[in-house]
Image (cartoon, rainbow, N blue to C red):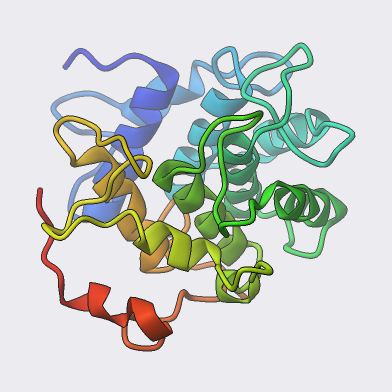
Length: 244
């Protein structure tokens, strides 16, 4: 099995654990947990980047392994604005990587009320756009991927995304639901759809079901996203079928 990248190995471990019945330490005669652990550097990071460490911490936490060194390294990478970038060396904070770091830290045992989590949540609040959604950073468009990452991070941090209402009356949830096409799949932006349109749909579903990564670790104090039928004018989305 040709899976060797840090994030790819991590995602496979999460998938095997979440699916149930499969052992990531012995799957197709490979020990993917040991493979991932070998990718940890002396300073605590996994692979080269913040985002690869996020995935590794989530995966190893899901597998019941100690991730304290990786968690400590991630905390040391927080920018002054409270956010996190994608890699070391002064990468600008962005919504996606800040959100995935929040999920990784909480999966690794960081309390929801710790300064690193509260500062990260505060950063995300400053990044919410008037339409209720989030972008990757800079002048990029708000999109379903960033919305999904932020919603999952808020749920993990004990925040209710339905209370993050802008002056226009929008929330991250209503903004994400607006990307859903009549066929059921989710667009990336208001004008762009990934091909095939499955990736953004797969990204949106965990967020809308209130499941932060990794989905196998119950998060104490997590605030689930309200089910369809309790979102006002967005309630009709609950009757749509998934395209992919």
